[in-house]
Length: 381
Length: 250
Picture 1 (tube, rainbow over the protein chains, first blue to last red):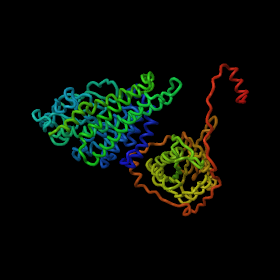
Picture 2 (cartoon, helix red, strand yellow):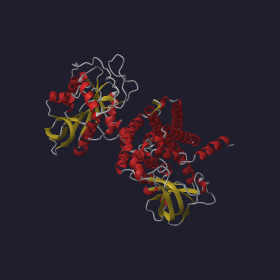
Picture 3 (cartoon, rainbow over the protein chains, first blue to last red):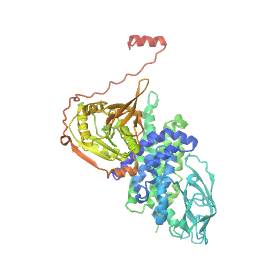
Picture 4 (cartoon, one colour):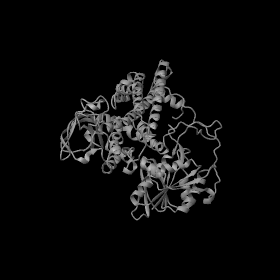
């Protein structure tokens, strides 16, 4: 383990590792079947403090740095992706804007609830017409005497059907847009005019709930504005930086699990009188997978540690997310391949992990947008 | 009420162990060490008793400095404080019981819970010896523990062949924990952080007034013989023949 990871975090990662093996893996098939996380499992996660790892300790969290958090997340991602999904929003995009920009009152109210897992958070940025190009938002927030009135639609919003609090990014000035015309709002579940639309049916990520969020003259009081009017674009961009690293961490975790499944199977499966691990074709698949995961892991540790030292990690987080998720997908493909027909069977779980890992090349910014941002940084001036 | 729990640092039960070439012990390089799983169950039970009846849970461990890692692990589960008996020489179960008896004399706990055995050497004797030395009642291999409301007795159930046996013991008493007593909790991050602030008292065997003089010494460790591959038999007659003539069990 990276020597920069604190002693406390190592101890906790051991605890998480046992939790994953003893509690998560035995129920992962049923999560996939039912699309639901067992209540007892979520309760244990809350008791372990998993929902508040990144939230500052004065607001009920553990105040973990990004490096330690990424390695907890990596471990927790080795079972079912829905387990990671439910806690990572509270720790990341769902609470971060409140931590960074919230008023003392907003922090005191929301953060302890999010840290304990009593509240589930959601972050509503993406729209049918605005993905990576966040400046193309159409959801409008209009200033009235009573407060802000929101109209528009978001989609692909993680945790939306179960969320208690939404961080919503909306347009407050059509002319200025990304240059001071976008603001962030905190909207409580059950607010009048807030509605959850279709829950999306997806290729992978079963149990990881994503849905449309619809605003129809939804009134948000002045106290619901997060940060200054017009600071929403900056808030959204900053939030996504960290999100990219957590995506990389999870992808590496899934990749490591797949690799260990591949190693085990290669030693067990015999063809032509010997384990397939003795064939060079299989050995190269395993060797390439281990090498790429190692590289991704080092990029993760380096970038997270830079962030913790106050560096701007815009480009590094894009590179890490790009490389780690692409590498993990290659690992999934090779491990499926070396399992032959068995890999195609649902019972080996590889097909599920393969579908889940596929999403990582898309969410938190596609591989293409990451390359676009890396290149833009290289070519500027 | 005060509960004392004993914990031992053991190699991870899932680790693949290798014996040192000279046969004096196992190779410890690269091996992960954990709290003996039965002791972890003992800690969990103590915490549950405390949560129900209030009081204090204290853990004690014997060994060199590294065992404080396991003491910290118990503190992170919610134990209040630790006692680290610094001793680097060799010892056997009787010595351990002798040291623990001295700790009990000092601490005067109402209940002492031990794991029924340590998974490294599987001796399973310290609990019984400790009860004998102290003259305390004992209830070994507990699968269920209930403390009376007046905190004067404990009802302890254990699994026996064909059923359950329940006995009542007066406090103070010795209880040893079996596998199905409970499922230990996971250390939460806030508790791991709090554990650093909790006190761990270091004592020496001499200061306790204990005498260590092993009656048992390990002469040599050897690996179990390699299992030979099985064979398939053609018929029942074949099988019976082999059981009679080769295995000689019929």
